[in-house]
Length: 148
Image (cartoon, rainbow, N blue to C red):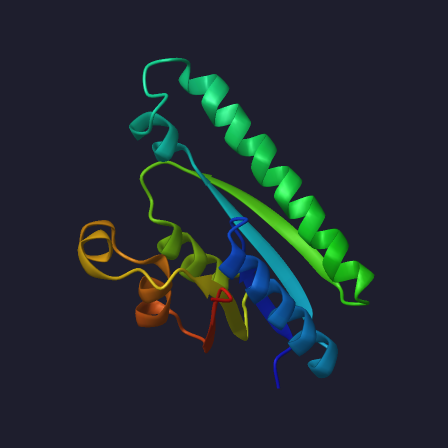
């Protein structure tokens, strides 16, 4: 049923748990996994290190994203599942938009992603990548919460 599973990862507990669910599904379905990490350089420009050295901050984001993808890809392959990975660098493009676009381009049969379960004012102001994905994706989505 599912042969191509897109798994966005950011290192959060919810995303890590989502990766585990995706691995189980992929093994069961004989599917392949595409791991996706979005290095959002806007976070560097708008964050705590705004005026320090933007290129150095962006480079740290790329390195951290690459390390995260390598670790996740090793975990997937160790489970006997075919895996590949993509590191996207975007400025000012919401992560959810990047995920939906990659799901269309690849094309994915399923997206498995973690959600932080944001509520209240933070969710209202910041939006929710998981909610954006669910609202705009052309494929089914499995949302996985981190363990309470």
